[in-house]
Length: 485
Image (cartoon, rainbow, N blue to C red; front, side, top):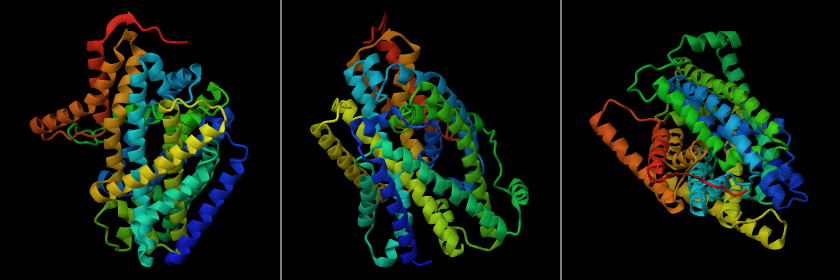
């Protein structure tokens, strides 16, 4: 497959997105950008959230990681399901009761202005880094297999990618994203299923045979019971619960979509249906990973040095052209469904939490919102360059590791606020939030020093939140906090 054909397919894909953006952005205002006028169909959000949650990282890294950790990632996903139940039963009712646009406004109600902005800061930090890491992975694939052939510099391809996202999201915001993410989820899931069908056909097996082949392979181990292993079931399962509560329930990006539903009941239906679909899609990705390794071994194809490279190399160098194009479309859909949503959420949080912007539609607000949207686009581009310069590990692991430090304070703040009615000092609470990641990092060093066999995984998030709880309790008083109505 030539780079020209690949570029043409990607160009057509973006033309479709731009057209959808144009249609959905008609008569858009600040309310459309921030809340979608609270009129989004719940089933549309449930399906579109798959694209946002999957991202280009999952599309490439999860199948590749099967060669190293088998199906152990599914332990984490089982925990995700119970995390979604917590969001449905506790967080969504809270957000709808307070009629929030930014979910971090709750922190202002519970603790005070400084803590409100601190919580929003941690979200902005984590989401910016996460979006950059996800886009970096896809930009790297495009660079190797398309732009390098034209001697097109990496920094220009990154600017082009982010610029396209900016173009179709800057006016309609979340109203546009609801529709573009639904479309991109269709492409993503279709690419996944069609690739599995192709591999089955190449191996001369049917669907039932492929299940048996995967089950009897070295890649299907699901449960890990060694407590010192980073894939130990209990660590993965509990981390899945808390990571979901933090990275979904306390994340403006994913919650902003839920807050566009007409009612709380619709938002809860959306999350419940999404939770089942998500498990099924991840299971398909893991099955694809096993089949990719079996396909490579059967055809005596040398495995790449990095697991992230397996799917791209097979798809672009060993699959027929049609399936190479399907891979490109699927990867593009996964990457940009996550990135466009993140960019919109970053703009929303900054405008609401730091600029105190209201939904009123006036020239000043719209101009400021455009400037913020462009500013975060530039920031993401800069972060991608930094990530490209310093990253030397699995991107999926890197994103979750970063999340452990940045979402930990959010998990601690929200959980303490909901569980306890104790009064805390606003400024001290903010200082604790900035100190907690440092304490967590030092604790990890000590644990590794005294228990070298213990491998720290996703539980960084839990430890971080516990630190927040302990210090908030120490500085708090039994007096019941009176929140504003």
